[in-house]
Each structure stands twice: as C-alpha cells, then as structure tokens.
Length: 281
Image 1 (cartoon, rainbow, N blue to C red):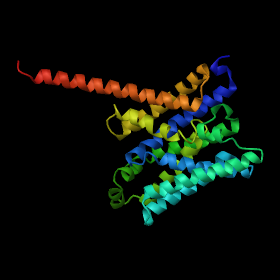
Image 2 (cartoon, rainbow, N blue to C red; image 1 turned 90 degrees about the vertical axis):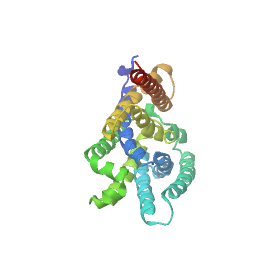
Image 3 (tube, rainbow, N blue to C red; image 1 turned 45 degrees about the vertical axis):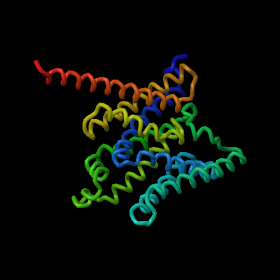
Image 4 (spheres, helix red, strand yellow; image 1 turned 180 degrees about the vertical axis):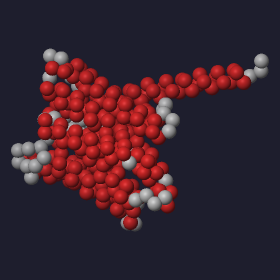
C-alpha cells in the first residue's frame, strides 16, 4: 500500500502540513522576542488540559487549548504587572503543568481513558476526521493572525517601548501572541508531542536565519522549512516505520545542520574570493 492510498496516513500528512506551516510562523515572532522556549512551558500546561478533558470525557485537544490559553494569558499579565519576572512565572507553570498533567492523565487512565505517551510524543496515526478539522481551523486562525498583523507584531517583538510610543495596542498584541502560542502548542501536540513541540516552532526559524536577510524572508523561509520537514518526516516514518513526531523533528534538525554548514562554507569561499580580489596585483 502506498502512502497516498491510506486514509490514515493522508490525515496524518495533512495534519502535519498544517502544523508545519503554523508552528514556525508563530515561532519566528517568539525567536525575535527571545522567548524561544515558551513552547515548552505552555506544552507542559497543555498536558494538564489534556488530563482535564479525559477526566470530563470531553475533547482533550479543546480542553488543552482552553487551559493552556488561560495560563499563557496569566503568564503575560504577571510579566506585565507582577513582581515575578516572566521567566520565573513560566518556570512555575512549567513544573506545575507537568505535575498536574501527569496526575490528571494518570487518574483518567485508571478510569479507562488516557494515554500519556501519545500526548508527550505525538500520535499522528490516531488523528481522526474531527481532529483534522480542529487542527485545520485552529491552524488557519494562527496563520491569519500572524500574517495579517505582521507589521504590528514585529514592532512589539522587536521593540515594545517603540511600539507603545507609536500608539500600537501593545497589551492586546502581547495577549494575542500568548493565546496563539497556546493554540499552536496544543494543535502541534498531535504531530510531534508536547515534549518536542518547541522544536517545530524554533528549528525551522533557526534554519531560515542562516540564509535569509530580514524578518519577512525569515518568516516565509521558516514556513517553507517547516512544511517540507513535516511532509518529509511523515513520508520517512511511513517507509521506515518510525515515530512520526520524532522523525519530523530529526528531519528539521538535519535540514538546519545542512543549511548551516552550506552557509558557512559559502561565506568562507566568499571571503576568500574578496581577499584575493583586494590583494596586490
């Protein structure tokens, strides 16, 4: 059976493609803001939401969206108003989220539901039509927000004080970034799992930065890398019988290494040529 003849793998491929586009789009702003690791913190909180959904016999993905979005907004408000630094508040959520998630998912497992590993490491093979519709809807919302509001979001991420002086709604934009981070982490857990979700948000951006000049080029380059890594990862996992989430991340990392080495060699050759041209004749 070929990849495209399997409905299960077609759903996995479509879901991975949507996540491969949306996660690096948001990740570009987070990297610009030097908040690359926030996905890990929100991911651990999302695990608590998964546990809530399983215990209540509701959609784990939807419950994770609601819980992680509420906590992301809380972190942003603490960062803005409270005495606790943003990274410290994120650390508290990080540990509280994973502890609460393990307890709740464990309780759901004893009552007949819940599989912790599928949420920690992803389970694209179990994506249903309902899951795919939810991933598509939320992914489209994230893409629309990040692309349509690109100038304003870039201003806030690059220089928050300048954005405030320029009259931009800084608080609203910060809260939007917090909520879209939570949404992206939650939908990406179906592809790569909560423990690897930050990789899909950050590694394509790091790859694009090796060759791109300017924020816009980095943004679209990261989207292209994320999409290709997702498609290639699912294809490789199908043929090699490996975990799709981990395979997607490893493909993305391999792309980063290849591009970084090629860019370094190209720059070295360019400097050597320039030195020879500038030398005595």
